[in-house]
Image 1 (cartoon, rainbow, N blue to C red):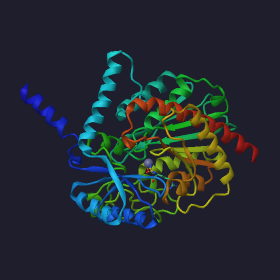
Image 2 (cartoon, rainbow, N blue to C red):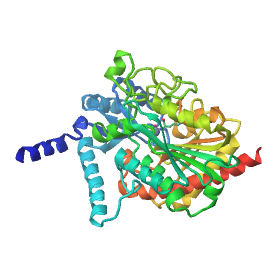
Image 3 (cartoon, helix red, strand yellow):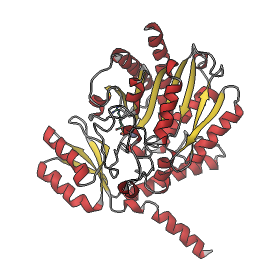
Length: 426
Ligand code: 0X9
Ligand code: ZN
């Protein structure tokens, strides 16, 4: 018995051992030179940007123990202003786990069923929720499992329709989430959308005029790995034939689409976090999203890929910062969505910024989902960067419901505006 308890404790304490001694920092460069120096540290000191800085916005960066001294020296030498974000990342992650667990316990103690948008939950909880919705509402919900992830987990999406997907005059809205494993606020938002369309439909128009596809976790392997091994895992978990990919598994799904693939803001080194893969669509996870877009392209008016963090609504083109033929439509619908979110947001949440991906987020990146969707003909395609507040990927789970609700307002308003714009331009 004693040994059993001891080994349980050992597992609990070993939980975030990977991050022992790691620190994160806020960085606030004030010149293009300082920005460039910070950018170069990604390779030389293997830093991980949680949020890349711009000249008018501080960034957040994770630094391994071995490189901390040099990191601080470089910043001091270059006069780059910085302050600690998390002094002890492992300790912070242990606290975050306790907060999540306490929230689970709270629901249990009130005998209230905890929904996947009330907290951060494991993949099986999300899938059980989807299964139960599909079983309970067979007339409007169909579960689809188009394939398995690299490690063999099913990838599941729900098709939601009041007319069995047979009314082709309806607009189709596709919401995809969690291609980036560590962005834990995205499955709550996607599952809440399911809840609002099926269990708590308050606006009939959303089913009368629209069909929906909701894919809450497009990268289940990475998502589970971020729970069990490395909280800040971003990529898939695939390996291919090359030696280095065995050493460093995973591809950045949002660099893997066939749109100016592996040209900007990406890398051919599997050991980096923005590795684009050995070829476009090397990942089954991105192929599944691609195939959904192609299957419903004729009536897909709006595609949203959910990410975090930074409170931004981003649209093409993200590789070079240029605007598409449909820039006016993209901006109009973007603003409509941001305004709807604004109406519902908490006072201390930042206001969303809306604009071209490259300009608003502050760096170019090619091979991204929203650009690909738009390039093949989805008229309105966006990346949402959900709020992270000061905590980033570890946003307090007490906000999961709030973020889900406010984002839903944005999605619903966006769907209607998208339909209006697409129909009038036909
Ligand atoms: O870099 C990304 O993939 C996205 N940001 S995140 O922090 N969630 O990783 C932004 C993608 C923006 N879209 C394009 N560059 N097209
Ligand atoms: Zn992301």
